[in-house]
Amino acid sequence: PLHYRDDLKSVLIPYGLVQDRIEALASRIFSDLHIHIPEQLICMCVLKGGYRFFSDLVSKIQNENRLRNDRSLPMSLEFIRVRSYVNDHSSDQLEIMGLSDLNVLNNKHILIIEDIIDTGVTMAALKTELEKFQPKTVHVVSLFTKRRKDKKCIFKPDYSGFEVPDHFIVGYALDYNEYFRDLEHICVMKESGIAKYRVTGDDHVE
Ligand code: PRP
Ligand code: MN
Ligand code: MG
Image (cartoon, rainbow, N blue to C red; front, side):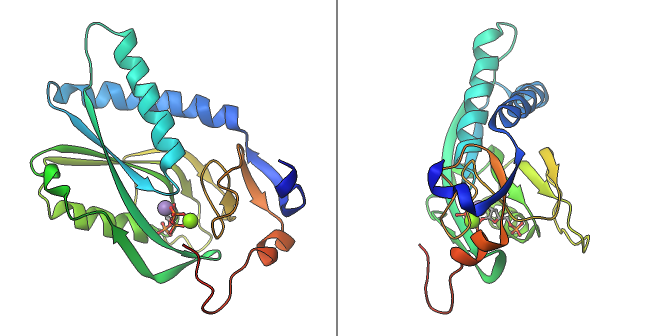
């Protein structure tokens, strides 16, 4: 869109390709996990970055349910808010919100749906927290995993849509200080864009 035109370097992955990949993930996940039926699969959305991927993936799994009459995968939906990033770096404070009423996870199958695994710190911490509720199984799907130059990623998801190069990416709900979530394509920012929306000191984004 017009309001981000000067802040972006290039489109890394167009929206259509993201959708195709999610369709493939949905069919793989459906095939692997329907064996747990008739139990529900708890699909857990990791807000905010994961909301579009969550929404599209759940719809596409529903499509699988609609198209088949030999098998199905019943789902329930949960939402959790995890945040650590300020500017383009993970801060040392990881906040996990909305966990208190998650006793519903006890003895259940969970699929954590996340947008990106970069350092892996967020997912490693979240998975450890969720294990406390003693679910039966926990699977993790991330639309993106980062190919980090320092090779340091402490978490590997069960399913991943794309491996992306070591750039800060935005769009399709992935943000930079709460900007660019309202962008269709996955894009790489210009240095000038990174500087323009940078926050300093006590300027806190919510
Ligand atoms: C981003 C992203 C992942 C996490 C990945 O969330 O959505 O949740 O960071 O980074 P890591 O693997 O290095 O931990 P962020 O903290 O920006 O919150 P948001 O989802 O609300 O944007
Ligand atoms: Mn996130
Ligand atoms: Mg973010």
